[in-house]
Image (cartoon, rainbow, N blue to C red; front, side, top):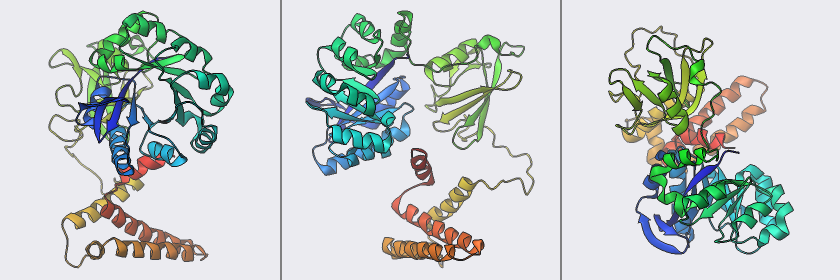
Amino acid sequence: MKKKLMASIFLSNSKAVIGYHDLRLLFEDPVQLALKYSEYHADELLITDLSETDEEREHHLDLIKEICDKVQIPVMGSCQVKKMEDVKKLLYAGCKKAMITYIENVDEELTKEVSLKFGKEKIAAAILNTRPLLSHSEFLADYISELVYLGKKDFKEAYTLSPVPVTVWLPDVSLDKLIETLAQDNVIGAAGEMINKSIKEIDSLKMLLNSNGIPMAALEAALCFEEFKKNSDGMVPVIVQDYKTDQVLMLAYMNKEAYEKTLATGKMTYWSRSRDELWIKGDTSGHYQYVKSLTADCDKDTILARVSQTGAACHTGEYSCFFHKIMEKEDAKATNPLKVFEDVFAVIMDRKLHPKEGSYTNYLFDKGVDKILKKLGEEATEIVIAAKNPNANEIKYEISDFLYHMMVLMAEKGVTWEEIVEELAKR
């Protein structure tokens, strides 16, 4: 079982504070702190919302959503979960898992409700002592996927009794204690003060743990570098593609060191032939490429890397290195549905930013959200009426009208197609 090192952030008054019982300021901007944890290669991030009011909770949910959008590691969200809506908001903000904290007793009704609604794999639970494990072990096995043990003692009893894998919250313990804890079969990770303090050296820490027989989380490779057919310089060309848009971004080269560094860190790493040195894409510009997949071609002499690109891929500032158009046939542009939506939405946004006299779109913006909603409702009704018509063409026209007005509403409320698609992909 691969083990993980989980960084943690506590949110209070929209700032990162030291912990549950210590609300002193740790970091002014929680989003930037989360990005640091991600860039230093923490395997996961636990965000705990310590809000005391509904207004503060909403601000924190916005921060959690922004963090989930920007970091390249999974996020587990935690708050004072009292009802299903609390879990729903954490998951819809982008958290991979929502964590319920049991102070003394297990809330079986709530746990079962959210587990059945969202799936057991998205629900974790935290306990402060081992009592819930003694009386609810079978129940927890059915409805949660991970246990986070926050107790200050009885570590061994917690991961021995737990029916699901355990992440142990550790204070600033010794390296020997970390190794001893992670070596246990049912322990999948460590979090807490020690991990946060060690974040800048986390790669070295993972290597040390690996050398002590503890398998740490890393990208798994089906092929070792020796299996590739190399060019005359002993390298393999890498075609880099945006995993969301399929746009080709750049061409680079890897040697064995760059290949293994990429797998170890999750950041695309190449060999610079001009500088004759290892090159982690983004170390200078901040425009990192985070690996989503690596695929070899039929001859195993080229790698296709699908990545999440931060900023521009090209040193010129262009998003892709491929921007010098040589030729293009008139019918070369395929009708990519999302591209059509984005193009229409771009026109709508342009009208909002640069009003044009006589524009129907500007008329809607000028009348405000109530007018937009009225038109959206009318178009929804038209779809229902058209659906009763045996002619399928009519419904296409009405759906197109509805989507246009929906995009006007999106522009008015500041919602993008990327956010909509990401939300749909979570469901």
